[in-house]
Image (cartoon, rainbow, N blue to C red):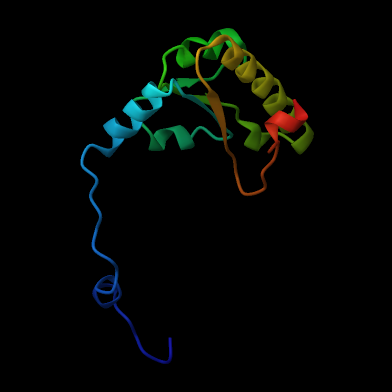
Length: 133
């Protein structure tokens, strides 16, 4: 950068101060419980679930596999799809099937179910759920 060497402390010294939100996780979960929201995460690779804790993780693709994980308001469920190992048409078909099942469960519940696609940069199987289901 302009011929100057920069070191980490110099660069970090210009960052804004660290923001600490006391009990942020608990407050977010309580907000989800209040509105009875559930979150279903379609995860294309098993390493993604290693970055979270205190959430359900399932490997089955039947609604019976993930329905119990979405039963409680405020719950989050990671569904490990392994679509990263599939070609685009297989990934799209599986995500489509899962999306339909999740939305059907959402219709049975007394609150919304949000679907999150956690997929790799090629977005294999990335769908617009409401328009394609």
